[in-house]
Amino acid sequence: MCWSAITYPIVSGNFNVTMGDYSARRMWEYDPDKLMVCMPLPRYRMILESLDDCIAGFAAPSKEFEELTEKIKKER
Image 1 (cartoon, rainbow, N blue to C red):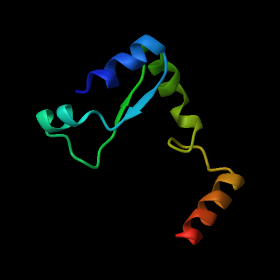
Image 2 (image 1 turned 180 degrees about the horizontal axis):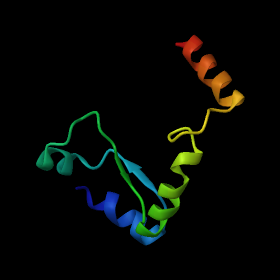
Image 3 (image 1 turned 90 degrees about the vertical axis):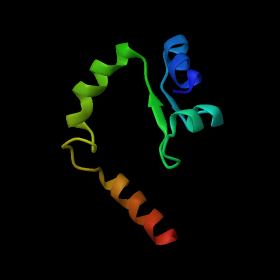
Image 4 (image 1 turned 135 degrees about the vertical axis):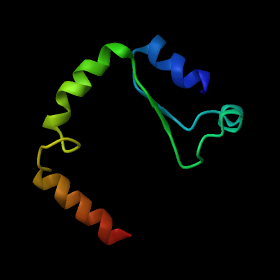
């Protein structure tokens, strides 16, 4: 895996979304349509516990989110 995908979250304490570097993608034969999402370990529990409260879990999307989604669909 791309070293910056791993080290950035550890050093900064922040999330990292990256395509990775060209060498790592070729060496490990990553799918060209995939991104790497990395986060520091201390944040995992908070994220896992909040999944049911977001639209990725069981919560219903807000009216504003639905309106924005419809607007984006129409612009395509």
